[in-house]
Image 1 (cartoon, rainbow, N blue to C red):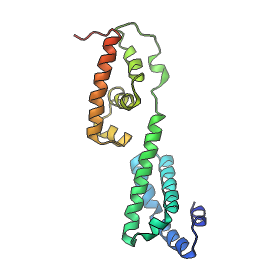
Image 2: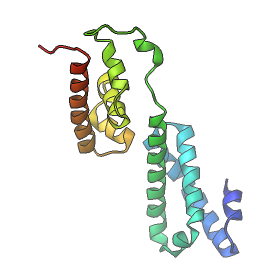
Image 3: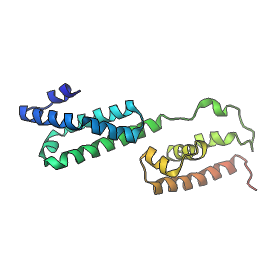
Image 4: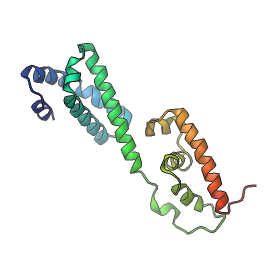
Length: 173
């Protein structure tokens, strides 16, 4: 990876400084990404994308004082990791076979289909909360939102779900 990154830089001085910074901090940044993503493959992807962004913004990177380069790079890695999580989250549907029967009105298995038909911003969070039984804090970390935003979406999602259930003939006692 380093030779590809160095090829994108123009001056020999920039290449030398960048190589030194890369060798000193690559493993730390990988461990940081791994702590966020919990997947070696995703962590490696996040760090590689972050290094590419660093080279693409080389002028900004080299204009930073020495003690500000690592914090800047940590932010780039974090933002890249969160973007990857969001991308992965969109590709994380529920298993298709866990609610296969066509529900009769009032059949609890149909609730899953109603959740699946909800807008994505609520559907994903409701699936994580009520189907997988995740805590709000874990959901927030996973989807890259604050806990209060997750709580708000859960509350609004519940209201939408209740409204959809009423339309489908589910009765509350």
